[in-house]
Image 1: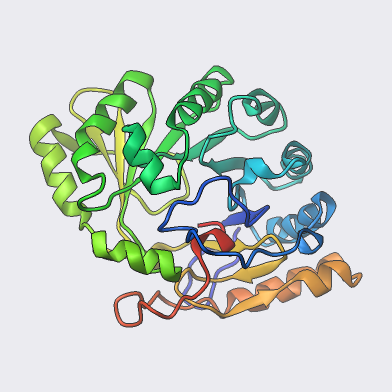
Image 2: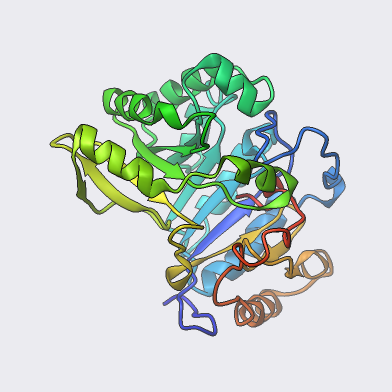
Length: 326
């Protein structure tokens, strides 16, 4: 059984950042002028990451998602995956990625225990994609997604951050893209995290508008979907495509939040909307045993806030999204 927080929510899902670096610069996630990266010497090693995750598993965490920054920029990612997938209690190991480097790594990561991916893809137009990502190569991402499909990573979920005046006209095109390839699609509202996130709020779009538009075009029916996330899912017409809507601002999902996030240097973040954290690095590098780690994490989980406060204090979070794994 997963341990519960002070509000009775079981915590069964850990988003584990393995780097805060990224090979793209999506403006809502990593501002173009940001240079405040953690030094590599502070990054947890594969064995340290495994020690931390083993403590979370003892508390009932069953799903671990490797995140970044961009996880694929870390050269020992497959080693990390092998360490974590072998831990007792961990039932699912997944990956969040921009897929730009996935073409050459998909097969090895699948063999190391990563069973499925969430891939960020905000546009199918090369110019718009480059604008959002700071010059990214759309074709490299598309090749990476195909490599993941060939490696039998399933499901492959496409995450599309919807921004009015930038990519909102592409919703139907992305549905058709995912229909053709058997991918799942999730639309995400912008969030005021870091200066980039607050800039993106200038393009905020309530996803109910997109849901209604797609319902008129394709017909949407409530559906279930495997996963640990907060999306509300719909089946598209009589197809096998499932589309999700993640709405942290218009319809927050805090009451069912089952997750915490750990940064690459061991800082444990309890909520996207709070700066407070617990630094596990001194314990991991100071010789703490398993029960000391378990006790520290358990105590921290009791401080998980009831909900975020994005509407009342959008300027509160100063770290960029890339610093905590999204």
